[in-house]
Length: 277
Image (cartoon, helix red, strand yellow):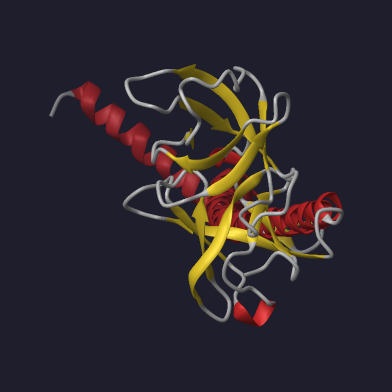
């Protein structure tokens, strides 16, 4: 072993022994309130480590609590969304009920001058084979509905008449646009008489007007004449949109009904015992 290495080892050993001696002495010397120098040194060394450990622990705990709180908030948010959805639906239903109630009241007030008794009803269905042939209303025999009662829309325009079958709370209505319909009508201007029936496609035709007759004006209003003893006179039906003299003895007079299928939700059934068959 070289002299330099031997001296170096001796100094290292001596330094280590001095440090150990001081360490043992410091362990026996109190500083202040029963705290030794060793404890002081250990505190200074390990305090930052403890601080980091405690901070990490708190971070983990806080993150977990935040996660649980976030999950709880999300669940509450979903419940609130469901509650808002049902409240919105309930609000819409209440608005619809209120609207129907007001519309039904308005309908009865509008048509009360046409008959001594008016039954307000709702359209709940149409003929699936032909939309313009017939409809079903939510009033029946228990509501005083019988056969051949006039049916009007909420503005008083003629829609059709009741026919069989008539159940306790339902009844069939033949529309004036049906080919099976027949209404005695008269024009407002020149008092042209005729029988109105449907063409099955949304319009009506006035039959039995002679081709040689000068009666009939395009744009003229058509009303019920009351001659058929089913419909009271004066109900508005529609207006003439075209007149043509085809081959034959009768004119072809096309009438556009006043009632609108798109708004045909509420109707009025007119009960008039004097005109009922």
